[in-house]
Image 1 (tube, rainbow over the protein chains, first blue to last red):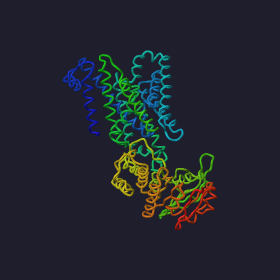
Image 2: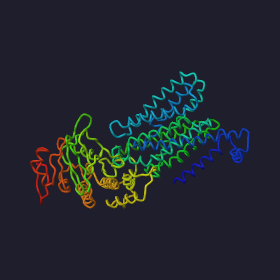
Image 3: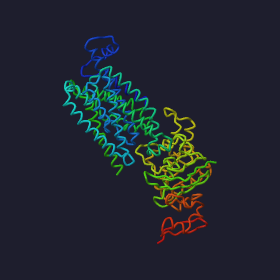
Image 4: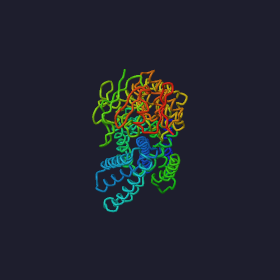
Length: 324
Length: 256
């Protein structure tokens, strides 16, 4: 299964580099990748398309893994960084950093901080009254997203600095990998790698939360430590994803959810499978975003939103029906 | 021989003390039923014994040592708890549920040893769940699900088994079957077993000893026939219950 997903990712990335708004012959693509050619087409491949495809893979993997972690910790298959407002918190922090003119390196750090604060809020809210319910988790997300959105709009209006780069900021806010700085990509990839290692290490212990925190404790889990580590790993993954690509929604929800039906409920298998599956999903979404209305470019977040939101609604309806 | 004892335990939630100087001694090979009226402190006592609730005074001693000093992972290898709640939104298989019992022994990246896998298979076999091992928990009946969660506790291979109202969601046939199996395992393996039960007749039929909790203390502790008499039942549970006896086994029925 894992092999099939990795193969799918490889194929998706290959297609994504070969295809685009500007038609470039495969031979020229390979030459550009190998560094053997120069000129506008090679530039497009090396500095626009390749970083973009790599960024989509990194962000998709990060969001899918973060979704799997959150779903395990909150014992709720409807949780993900976007739905729970974690990405919104990261976005607010990142925009604030940009508005005050923080150096480029501070933006991902701010995003991580914002994600950490947001995911902690969701976790605290979800515990009120004992069992995290669908309603509390979603409510937390609604509140956080609304609050963050309002503040971001305020900052965009009030900040001269942001106004100068308004279009770029808005594009980033809508969630996409259109313009990727290679330094940013490398930094984000590093954070995501660390987050993924933590996710794979924590995943087997998240299974123990299936019947609640008390049972996890009697099974031998240090609940406090595992919870803190999981929240931190989620924040790292979501923060890096937001810093690189802004608000990309629903990948963290849809990918683990779809995978669970195939690989089962074990979080270890889920997190491992989420990495190539999430990466492939966003690579394909971004490919669609830049080719469907070519030469116009949609942010990838539009594709994930258009596909993800109806999917999420369907899941919500089905879960309410089961619970009723 | 393993012993688990609550010694003068006072415990509660916030400022409210539920247990007041409660004593209960458990040992290998015995099934002890903890019974009592609502709010008496039965579940609180069980949670103290499980190390989930720290007493404000007194202590819970495992083989003479306070369990408060044991880290979670080590305690889980000595004391297993069968939870009352076993609903989950995730489609774990029976084998995966049983496998949760080995979580305290996982390697750094969640690796399981052959010993872990063997322990899971033994736990499944002990409860005749092997044919169902690949079935998803949401496709099982209530009785099968309760057995899966019991298998999870057995897979911990602990010396102590604590059950919190394990028969709440079961029909009478399954109630009897589950407790009879627990009793067999307790005797076969020398386990220390305590179960909070609300059904006095189940307790009388399947426990070696009954401990009656009332107002935060154990007020009577002994063999079912010695504990369940008309006077005690009336004093603890109020009027309207009749105590009978059949071949030395007491039973309690509501009085019309």
